[in-house]
Image 1 (cartoon, rainbow over the protein chains, first blue to last red):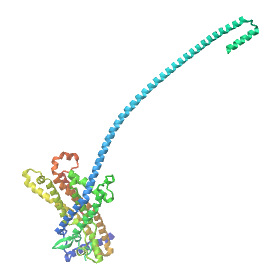
Image 2 (image 1 turned 90 degrees about the vertical axis):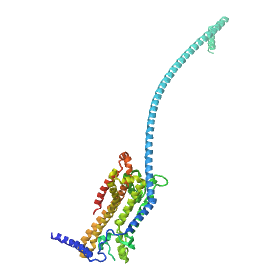
Image 3 (image 1 turned 180 degrees about the vertical axis):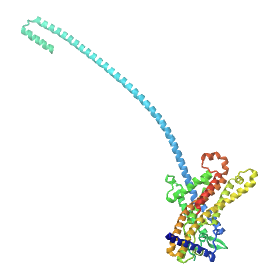
Length: 197
Length: 323
C-alpha cells in the first residue's frame, strides 16, 4: 500500500506542478499570459481558403475529375456493353443450340430412316442376286444337260452312220474276195484302225 | 525564441493560427494560408497522377479500361465509393454533374486534415532553433491544420452554401422558392418561410463549426497531453518525470491515431452533408413525379430521409470526434 502511494504521489505532484506552472504563467502575464483565441485569424484566411479552393477545383476539374469521370463512365459503358453483348451471345447461343438440337434430332431420324431403307434395299438386292444366281445356275445346268444330250445324240448318230458305212464297206469287201480268218482279223483291224482314225 | 510544443506555454497557443505577414492588422499570410496552399499542392500531386492512370486509354484495349498502380487504385476506390455509395443515392441521375465539386471538397478537406497530423509546425520550429533562425511567428514554426481555423471552415461552408443554393436556384428558380415554403399551405407561409430561411442559413454554420470543432478538439487534447512533458521533466527531473512523460506521449500517440480516423470522418461528413443539402434542393422537384421510380430503384434517398440521416450522421460523428 505504502509502495503504491509512494508511486502515485510523485505523479500527482507532477500534475499539480504542471497545472500550477500554467496558472502562474497565466497570472504573471508576459508574452504568453493572454490566452490565445481559438478563433484566431482574419477574413484574409477565408479569402485565401476560397481562392485556393476555387483554383484547386478549376485545376482538378480539368486535369483530374474530367478524365476520372470519363474513365469511370467509359468503363461503365464497356461493362454494360460487354454484359449486353454477353447476354445477346447467350441468347443467340441458346437459340442456336435449340436449332442444332432440332437439326440433330431430324438428322438422327433421317439417318435411322436411311439405314432402315438401306437395310431393306440390301435385303431386296440380296434376294434378287440369289434368285438371279439360282436362275442362272438352273439355266446353265439345263444348257449343259441339253448340250450333253445333243452331243450324245450327235455321237450316236455319227457312230450309227460310221457303223453303217463301215458295215457297207465290210460287206463290199467280203463280197469281192474270200476272206480268211487271218484276213478277216486284219480287215477288222484295219477297219477299226480307220474307225479310230 | 519560443519553445517547441513540449515546452509551449499553452496548448491552445500551439493549435491556434499565427500570422506570418500582417498588413494593416490583416493577416495576409498566416500558418493556415501556407497550409491551405500546401494542402492544395498535395491534393494535386495525389489526384492528378492518379487521374492519368484512371482515365481510359486511346487504344480501347482491356488494359486501357483498368487503373494501374497503388495510387490510382487508392484514389479510384475512394472516388468510386463516394460517387456510387454516397452521391448517387442522393442525387440520382444528376450525380456526375455535381460529383467534381463534391470530390474536391472531400479530397481537399481530407488532405488538410491529414497534413495537420504531421508536426510540420514543430519540425520547422525545431529546425529554426537548431540553425538559430526564427521560423514563423516568433519562432513558432510554420505549419498547423488549415481546417482547424474557423475562418477556413467557414469559408469552405460558405462555398458549399453558395454552391448548392446557386445550383438549385439556377436549375429551377420557382422550385427553389417553393422549397422555402416547406410544402405547407399558403396560410402557413408566414411561419414556414422564415423557418426555412433560418434552416438554410444555419446549414453552413453546422458545416463550419462541426469541422472546426472536431479538428481543434483532437489537436487540443494532443497538445495538452504533450504539454505535460516539458514542465514535468523540468520540475521532477528525468527520473521522476519520466513516467508522466511516457504516459503523456503514449496517450498523445493514441489520440493521434484516432485523429487519423477523425480526419477521414470529418472530410466524409462535410462532403456527405453538402451532397444532402444539394439533394434536398435539386432533387426535390423530382420526388413528386418520380415517386414510383424511386420505389423501384430503392437507392434514392428522400430529402426528408436525408435530414434524418443528417441527424444520425451528426450524432455518430460527434461521438467519434469527441475526445
